[in-house]
Length: 192
Image (cartoon, rainbow, N blue to C red; front, side, top):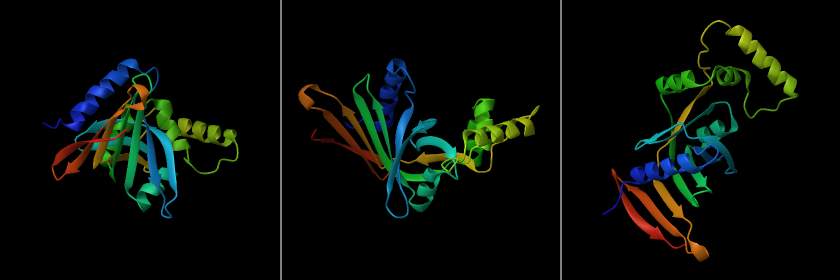
């Protein structure tokens, strides 16, 4: 009987939250640009479920440009303390404005102001320029709520494949691959 890969993810993620010293929700996000040039960076998982895995970013960033050109991505969770990793691949869609608004409202005020101040991934002449822009945002929204910037929001990776990798002695690792098959999942093993 095939286990639901999301139940297995939840189990492994709960163990990672209990054992990883920092950012158990950190994941590598790999994208490609219009010319096929790959790029990878760390982002934080901010939501997940059967519909996918969610992260948030500036929609003017390089990763957002890559996703606009090629709306597919790969994610990688690596939990060194558990000697485990999970790889996820699939198409990417933007989350709704309501989802982005709700998550943005949960962020610290300083993080909200930083989203207004940053032109993420663009060249910066000096740190002082960013700090000045941050202070301008702080002044602009002083005494009130900080709304979500129109250039900031979330993305959902809807998995077509999820691989669970468990370290074993002598590099005899265990690899379980789940592949979406319509509305269900098929499960198989891979050689280490």
